[in-house]
Length: 303
Length: 282
Image 1 (cartoon, rainbow over the protein chains, first blue to last red):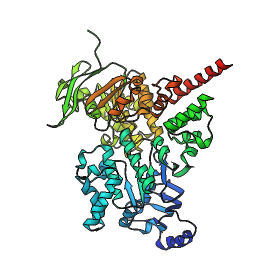
Image 2 (cartoon, rainbow over the protein chains, first blue to last red):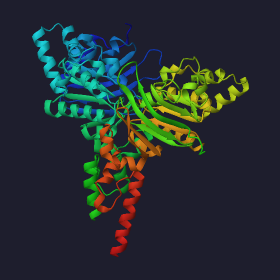
Image 3 (tube, each protein chain N blue to C red):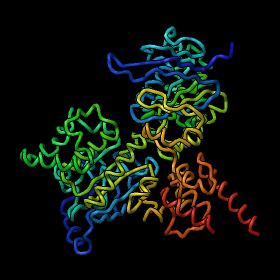
Image 4 (tube, helix red, strand yellow):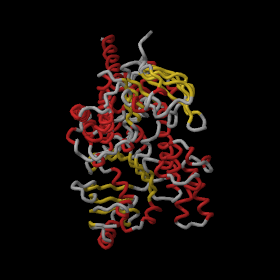
């Protein structure tokens, strides 16, 4: 693979020793830019993100904003399988991600993509989960243990011996999540995992992710268009636009920025839009869910 | 005799090969100029049903009539003049090297004059906002733009009925609205529209009638308000009304109706209520 750009090992090591003193973030992206080959416009420009262990980060924004490109940078597709030029640096657990081999990255970063059909390769659920750990050469007893744990975490122990073709969309995506978990990753990166799912399948995925995050401390980065659910579960929202981070903050802060979001083309949760029209809430208590909306409306109706 | 239904489905049952039926004894009809959302969980049979409208599937038993003619007696090429179909994934239908050629393909098959082909192609590209890209290689455009190429190809055919299978999946918010606004205009111009979607806020905003499919059967068929006011039916097929409808349902004791469809609608109801309240106190 051809690489241009400046992610040399030496340069990264120098950065590493400087940064390690000041931060304990699990994932740190610093002044990162990326351009695809023969592309005039960079796909990512000057990205800075710091993610603590156990955070649930939601990323949204229009198509072509660089959201998927960012996920490729995290799971090693860039630079290992996709050429282009990078600047800046991405470090996971203190070390540059670009110094690691795809196999090393696969242990650290679990990936789930949009289309489960394109991701699932095995005829049976158990085989699908065994595939990753087998490739890393773990002994059968350990693989067994990991499969059991991963199925439990994804809430699908009953699917273990099922053929993958017969599963519903939501089940397939949970199998993809379980397969990622069987690698015991440090971080789970999901790129629009619910876009092909019906509303209940979508809820299943969000509930599993919420449980993984809240009960098991899994760090999650999720690219998603469904802002109503993202607002309910994410600790922090990043809005991407034209390769940059346009807005960033807690869901209540971000979804209060109605004008900017409309301009960028991001769907504002309906409850938040209603509250934006009616007013009468402080910015910190902008309602985002049906329950919050109910409380908020009861309070203004009482006035 | 009463006027012919545009699409009439009579006791339709369909199974792939010798498997279990995917559609079971389905009957309904659509009138001219309707805008219908076809909804239901993944695997409910929505796409399978829609593919009966353009002859890609033929009933295992029962009948499908288009403009009063039994589809089993019509070729797919004949049906293509009556029912346009926009597939879920535009990349499964786009195969030409420029946008304009892609859109002109169906028209050339209709053996129209060169002038007519050019005119219709230009009009269709203008309708979807892709005029400036007429010479572009389709795969250099975004997925949302390619979805609009597929839509333009169907528009150019000027079919009375247009079926769209999840036209907004994988699109961002703005692209979804763009596509649905085109659909709205087509409907206003008299086209009968049937669209499949999982996005209930789009159903609330654009459809007038909803067909709810669950495991190959029709669970509900009615206007959008009545269907969304019955969340227990929707739940059976893994759907849920839009967030704003759910919120309105919490406000029954304030006499907010349970069938609110949009943010603006609930806002206006609340403002009216507040001003009435102030009025009676003063």
